[in-house]
Length: 184
Image (cartoon, rainbow, N blue to C red; front, side):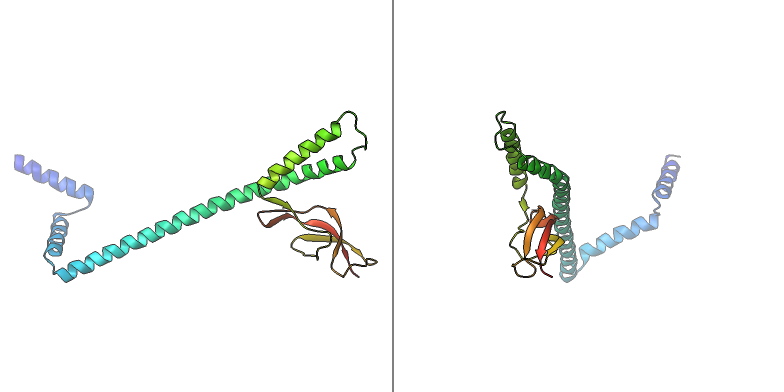
C-alpha cells in the first residue's frame, strides 16, 4: 500500500509539472552524454557558453549606456524647458533696468540690478549664454529676422539691431534672437 501511494504521488507530481517519467530519463541521459563526450565536444560547448556570456555582457553594457544617455537627454530637456519659461522674466528685469531713473535715492533700482545679476549668474551656471547678434552674419539657426534695413551701410546679411535677445543652452539654441538685418 505504501508503494502504491508513492507511485500515485509520483504520477500526480509528473502531471503537475507536465513532465513524464520518460522526459526525466531523457534529461538524465543527455546530462550523462555530455559528461561522456569527447574533449572536442566539451570545448565546443564551452566556447558556445563563453560566446553567450560575452553577448549578454555586451547587451548589458549597451543597455547601461543607452539608459545613461536617456537620463542625460531627459535632464537636458527638462532644464531647457525650465530656462525657456524663465527667459521672459529676464526680459522683464532688463526692461525694468532700462527704465530705471538716473537718480534713485531709494536704491530700488540697485536692488533690482542685484537680483538680475544673481539670476543671470544662476543661468550661466546652467550653461545658458546669449546668442551673438549685432555685427554678426545672419544665421537662421540662431536668429529670426523680423525686419530689413535697406539703408544700412553694413554688408548684406549682417545683423544691424537686436530687438529681443536670443539664448542658447549647452550649445543648443533655446530661443532665437529677434533681429534686424541689413540688405535689400
